[in-house]
Image 1 (cartoon, rainbow, N blue to C red):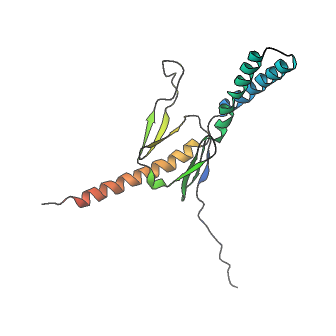
Image 2: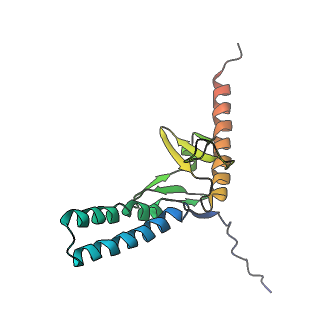
Image 3: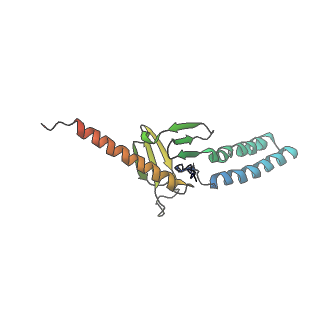
Amino acid sequence: MAQKKKNVRKKYLRGVVTPSREPAVIGAVCGAIFLIVTILCILDHAPRNTCIVCGVLTALNIPLLLTRNLRIEFHEKKGFVRRNLFGKGTLYKWTDITGIRSVRSYSFRKWHDGKPDDTLILIGQKRIRIHWDAHNAEVFLAIARQYAEEGREKDAADRSEGISEG
């Protein structure tokens, strides 16, 4: 009997790093409240300035809702795509990473509260900040650190080859 070969493919890690859902939820709740207030002002024939102020407060929640578009889609072999507020993506290869470092997380208070540090990925002059509570960040950062370390070792080997021993 002929044995069948199993088609074995390497499973590459992939996923999506998404920020915390809190800003989007706050934007949705506040937007709904201010929209109701705006509609009530219009129906009640309130002064025009009051309707305009409520409408502006409703519109100010749109950027909070758009924070769900901020994401990083990664694939272990192909690289990663960073998407901005409007969903426009930029493709980066893992070899483009020039450095990874930890930075203090944003805080409204003057002290740090013992929160873990955020991670900053450097790609040339561009910086990508990954918040400490982003979903799926650990897997992405493990892959990024691995490729950044390989890049540093390769650069060090290239520099040592260029130095003459004379």
